[in-house]
Length: 271
Image (tube, rainbow, N blue to C red; front, side, top):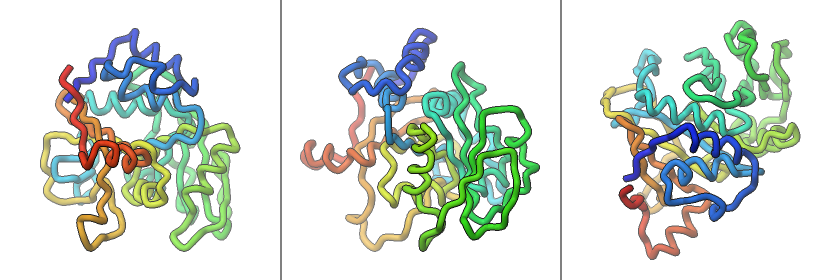
């Protein structure tokens, strides 16, 4: 397990890499920080990162909806670095209703991403904090059949499929606005739909040392019958202080697993 020890010099280098399109060989993969964040920063098109911060038992909140302080300070810093390295951060309407988030970069230096809300049925009231905080621009995805509501945001209305708004259609709409590095931050249903559509390049699962016991889970995919149907991505493992981060390579996972003769999880060499 490699420890993430970010320095100001490394962080400045990563910010300078944003959208460069550099290949993995363009940065020193032996450095844990560059290995973890380099692929996010350097992606120039069509890169989707999903991030989950959860307890040891896979919970992301209590049954009452309290999700604060699951991740430790280093876990929060990691999330904010991811926000700073992408161009847009996406959450579902339930996350906005429960947490009223700002989705900004506060724990690190860097640019705030465009904020994207998936609100298929136009449930937002317009009173939510992100519409009035003077922060980064807001994009709201709605169904073409949803009631017409006005917010201080760019409203994109899309046709719905069998399960609501199609993830690929949303990515296409963002790409048309010059937004190609996307962080899907929550909630569980939104993340699951992008994973099931095979649109997530990397999945970060940050596990904090606490047991909540009940409450919503961080990832909720369609049920399977046998374990051989489960996702088995190659994963690099990093220490974020008190939290442990699994960097799962979803789209590249199958090829990498085959190349490694059946090895499913790669523990990075000790620093």
